[in-house]
Image 1 (cartoon, one colour):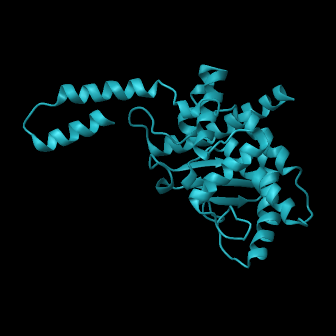
Image 2 (cartoon, helix red, strand yellow):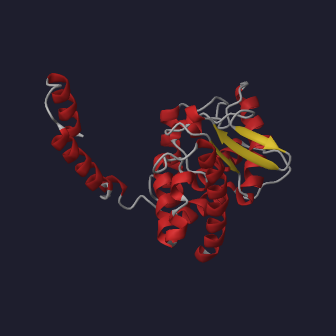
Image 3 (cartoon, one colour):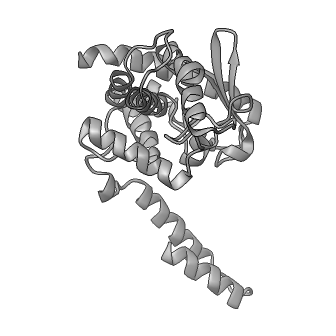
Length: 254
């Protein structure tokens, strides 16, 4: 970062000079940095199957009955958020800005998560069907738990994730809330962005074939100039394959 910032300043100060060697140095350093592991992530990147199981166990079984207490509601909501991020790892901003009818589409028996280009870092649309292993839990949250929280706080809005007072989560607090949940359940504070590392690590550990899902699943820019529609189609396939892999892995941890 220091080298790149210095080169940018020098190019402005002396635009007629050849800075190609310094720019090459910056690219080499960036590649080297990408191969290293941040110390702050050591011990905090768990297998996604562990995170998924922790979330589903915290939420407990979905039912047709409305919740009866705030403690039950908080437990179910927190478990749903944890399971959601383990299966659909997205950036904190996208996660916190999910809205019913816009980015969360309930279509018949399916629930689709649809992110427009302005909600992803690479500017590409991102779409995936909520996997069956999470679908019932998320549906119960949407139809029973979320309305209970809205009514409690006398609030009315379309945001998916609702605080104890019925309001949308502030993004900074939402990240802290996720870390609090994982610390309580797993003994480790895991912030939303680390779910993305967990997904990439889990996929790459399994096989090179699974590693191909990392880029579309995380909505990262592809190598070269892939078309937007191709990328969007890839996210749907990647989400389905990743969900199937985690579903199989849950049996390994029983």
